[in-house]
Length: 200
Ligand SMILES: [Fe+2]
Image 1 (tube, rainbow, N blue to C red):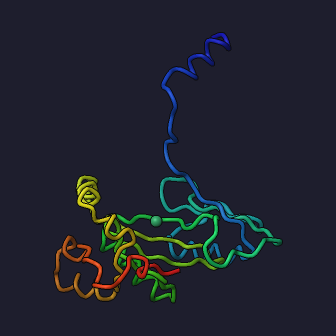
Image 2 (image 1 turned 180 degrees about the vertical axis):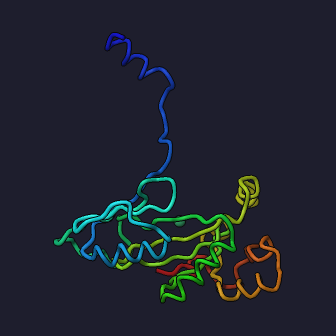
Image 3 (image 1 turned 90 degrees about the horizontal axis):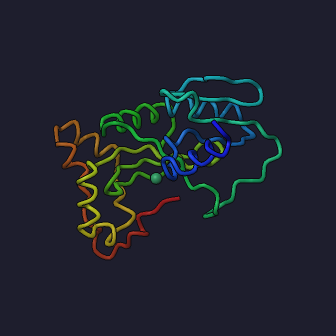
């Protein structure tokens, strides 16, 4: 094929393409071993490749979801809000999986600093050894239920969510309460702003 024909086809064939998937996150770190062990534990990951300089971690069909690269002269992590990436998020299949992971990590001394029912998701936020925020979440709704939740104005009323206690949810789960009932997001208490529900 002539180059001009090929480039015309590439440009015009399918129109603009979106990526097939989000593939991985890479962090520079001064604590390579500690960061590697933390992500192995939290994500139940394995080392796809690693040496003294870098490490690729996998936990599914992607060859690496987390990349860690050793760097010994890093700027300090900004304290407080900044324009660096705010958090990485990982989705579990069911509420039971998320609660089970919470218990597994708690046994190892890894606890979330913020547990919130956003509405569309239930999300537990952790901090890795370098201070990046890592969200472990589960979808509370089907896509249609999520659309209905937004259309009903719930997000205008409260775009943050309601802080929850995982241990209380585990008690309710053990008592046989249906997941759809546990994850039902209550209204904000009177006098409480959505922004009172944020933790950093
Ligand atoms: Fe998130």
